[in-house]
Amino acid sequence: MFLSRLVMTAKQFSTSAVTSFPKLKTHSGTKKRWRALSNGKFKRAHAAHAHLNAAKRPGRKNALCQTAYSSGAQTPTLKKLMPYA
Image (cartoon, rainbow, N blue to C red; front, side, top):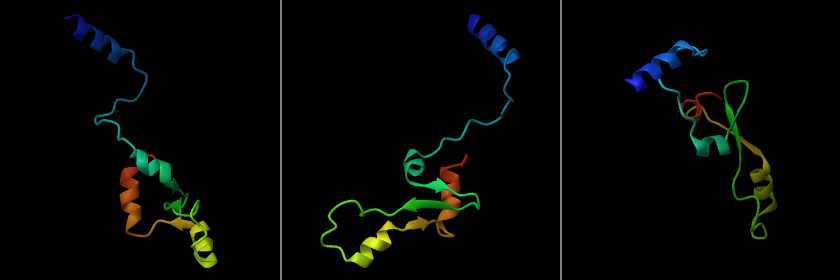
């Protein structure tokens, strides 16, 4: 009885818009590795650039330093994983 009355009171004083579905969760691993761009694509940094560089060719190290962008196949998946980006 008390709980139902409390829920009714909370609904009356709610200032947010009423949504009919739950909030979508952002994938935590994706939000740490990818950044959204204004054109709808995503960018990330290459891995394996921080250490053990003595055995890597200079051209390979330069290529690992460049920014990587999402491909056409990756972009819809990333939009699902990061719905508010």
